[in-house]
Image (cartoon, rainbow, N blue to C red; front, side):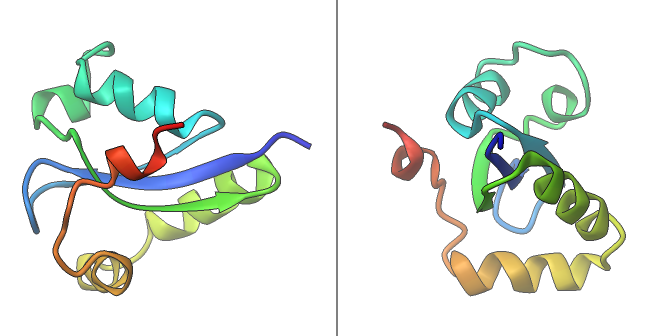
Length: 96
């Protein structure tokens, strides 16, 4: 099985939210922070990791990502604040 992570990045507390999925959370957040890919997160400067969940199987992570993308914004904010009430950048906590 390939592990996976679902994550949310933002540009500032309660700013633009981007939900993504990856098999390499540390590497993917590094890519967001260094604007490796030009796209939504680059346009809105979404570099702050504010929430994530890990899964033993990437397929489960993909399913969760798709579900979260259908959620209302208020529900997503509640999810973030349950784990990270200060909207702190969690990037340092995932560094190996």
